Image (cartoon, rainbow, N blue to C red):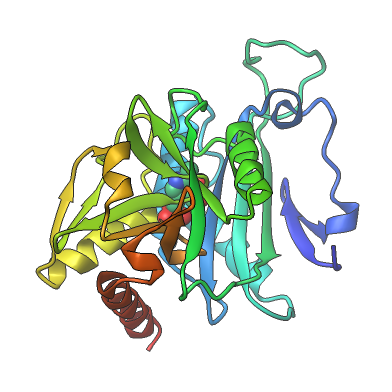
Length: 282
Ligand SMILES: Cc1ncc(COP(=O)(O)O)c(C=O)c1O
C-alpha cells in the first residue's frame, strides 16, 4: 500500500506506522462495525446518512458512539485534505477495543478502537453489465448491522470469481435478499421491486436514494420480498452500493437477463443518479 496518512485513536499517522494490538476484539472476535462513505470531487457524499447508520450499528452491538457528528466530519475532511491521486472513499471502523484477556463477554472498562482512512478506490466501468451467481445465504441473522464479520460475503464473492463472474446474490429460504456488498433491485413489466428492509438486509444508503429518485420520476417502485424464482425471468436486475452506485446484472447463473443487455430502466436510473450527484456538487 502506498504511503497515506490515516487516523487511529486520535492520531494522524502513516499507515505503515498505524499499530493495533493483536488483543483488539475486532481482530480476535470480529467485534466491530464499519462504514464506507463515498467521496466525489474530494467531498463527502451523504455523510449524515452514513454516520446515522454507524450510530445504529454501534448501538446494536452496545458500543457507545465515541464521537459526535462534527468530530467525525473533521477527521474525514482532515484525511481528504492530504495529497492523493485517483478516487478515494472514507473507510471507518470502530471495534470494541483491546483488553488484557481474551474473554467472549465484553469487558465493561474498554475503550473503542477508531480507525479511519481515505482509501483508494478503483472504479470499474460496469455500464455494459456484470455476470452474477446466486448463493445460499449462510450469513448470520442480523445482516442489517454493518459488522466487519464478513466471512460469508468473502466466500460468496470468491465463489463468484471462481465461476468467472463478478458478484453473488444471497438467497435465503427461497427469497433473494441482496448482493455481497450491495442491495438488490428487480424490474418486471415496468415495475421496480426491491426487498423490504429486514434483519437480514443492510439498509443501504444508495438503496434509499434510488427508491427516492425513482419515486420522484413517478416510476412504480414497490418494496416487497422477491422470490429467487422471479430472478430468472426478470426484465432487469441491478445491484446498488455507495461506491459502485447502480450496477446492472446481465447474466445470472449463466442465463441472460434482459437478453444479456443492460435495460432501459437501468439507463434512466443511472442518469437520474448522476444528475442528482451533479446537482449536489454544482
Ligand atoms: C451487504 C451489503 N448490502 C448493501 C450494501 C449497500 O449499502 P450502501 O448503499 O449504503 O453502500 C452494502 C455496502 O457495503 C453491503 O455490504
